[in-house]
Length: 197
Image (cartoon, rainbow, N blue to C red; front, side, top):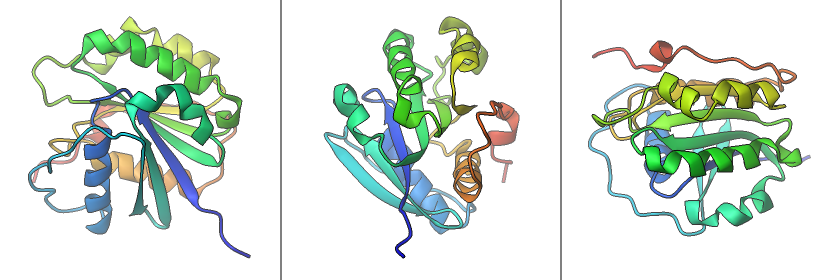
């Protein structure tokens, strides 16, 4: 019997850093979560979808959907076990649109059993909003309280690599265990920050 492919969707508005995140996670997973990621590679906005395999105790396929594909994201929800939803913590003007997209994702019936990791990216920029500011502005605690999914959130910098080991561990844990029955939790941001060299 063929084993089902473990699918993780990666969603977010155009320009939030999805392609860079996938590239960095792939490199990090090939180094067993350790080592220098080097300079960030150049990326272009995704038009369509990209499939990237990473090893996190088992092969997980990350399906990145371009931000411009937002109206048809639901076509890809079918066999999704986990979902990474990225927001740009340095772009307050994009926040309301991202919140609307997140509400659409959380209300989608095919994703009712999926584990979701909300990533606040670009914390390396001087103008970024903290998790507390973002949660307050979009009333994230209220949104999470109404959601059916198991939701985690974290601050990261795909450019600098900050917090990416935590994302890789979340993927490993999510794809190693069965769904925890809608339990909602938040990992403290400090535990996501990679220790200094």
